[in-house]
Amino acid sequence: MSLRLSKLPPACRLRACLLGALLSGLAGCAAPLPKLAPPLPAQWQQVEAMDQAKPTDLHGWWHAFNDPQLDKLVDHALANNLDVAQAVEHLRAVRALHAHAQRRYLPALSARTDDAIDPDASASFFVAGFDATWELGLFGRAEGTRRESQGELDASVADLRAAQVSLVAEVVREWIDLRTAQQQEHLLQQISQVRQRQWQLLQARKHLRLVAPSAVDQAQAAFAQAQAALASPRQAINASAQRLAVLLGQNHPDPAWLQPGAPPELGAWRLAGTPADLLRTRPEIARAEADVLRAAGELALTHADMFPNIGIGGSMVWATDINNNHRISSTPNGIASVGPIINIPLFDWGIRLAATHAKGYELKASVLAYRQAVLQGVAEVETALGSLQQQEQREQHSTVAWQALQHADRAEQTRVDLQLSGPLDRAESQIAADQASLELADARAAHSLAYVALYKALGGAPLPDVDAPESAPAASTGSSAGPTDGTPR
Image 1 (spheres, rainbow, N blue to C red):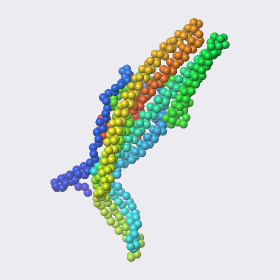
Image 2: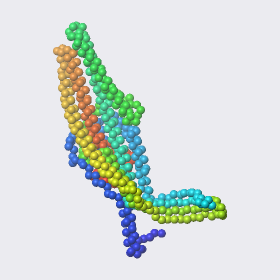
Image 3: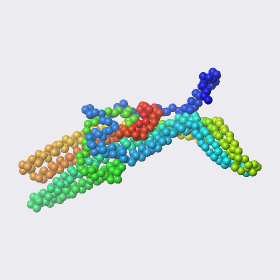
Image 4: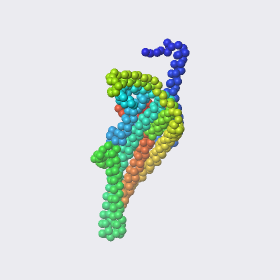
């Protein structure tokens, strides 16, 4: 049977409306979320700009290297990395709980059986029945539960995003290190071969008594040092290959990685984002914002514990004698009951109040942690931009030096061909050119790694697939980023 307000007397309608408004207010009387007011600058202080380039896609920034093998490695890592897989499973676990968080404030029904004995041991009974309860979630309990659950979900989404961002950056970094080490090994082998020829030429001159024995010893030492220098890139090749295998979820490196290849070279790119974009792209900031929402939910729940817990309960019970010393009866008896369930806190030595104060302090701490996360994110991006500029200049200067020494080496080769100079003079110019090539390779790698560090600080990673777990919309905590949209950031 339904009851319509329009059919009630005016006084009854007014009371019903007031009661409904009171219950609605009690159900949602949680403290408002704090205003985060992230301390963001208006623009980047150090801007790395290539005006002729298109804005770099934050979700595919590594394509600027134009390396198909690197692209495949990133795709394979995202599909098979175990850290990302763990984060996905954690997210699914949180989502499973989040989907049912608010259902604790819906009516619940349970069945039970029991056996009861009279205190005087004169009879025993078999009891069966149903119990129904409905916790109303008043005084902000329902809202606190929603905030806490949503904060847990948003934090798990941010953790997954952080794992993806870190993974992509590490794969690109290891690939650059691997290819650079292979190039360095090749150049050091060339230098070693030249040092060996120097030693052999000086040995021949020693037999002709054209050079002192000390010159031969010095040449031998230089050759031995060149051979020893090969250990460093070879160790780096092995270490990078092993780390790549772990990142891709493999138990051994792919033999194709160990085949020498040219290092990926950074192409044209341009940073189009602003500091405000960090609020939705950097997972550390999203994680801190989720912690604020979760702390606000915990505070609302401890605050609600200061007030009565109100619900509605009902039961239907049937009982029948099992054994009766006075008479034997098999007739079941049933009884029903319904009424309010009220739990009123009266006196607990201030435990509930202390818990509320503690959660209030934790909420303030989470807001401060959010501001710290924003400041740290901005600082990391600014540092990466500054490092990128310096490494780009280093590469430019190293290129000029390499070109000059290459030109000098070609000129020395011409002098040797014209018999105006000897092989030992050519060896020195060739070693100088190879040393410049080593410096240029190191400078290019440092420039590329600075680019990787920049987009890791920005939170660059692929967007999730359509089948990836997503969160439900979250309430805004007052930051300029606006409400979260449920997409892993």
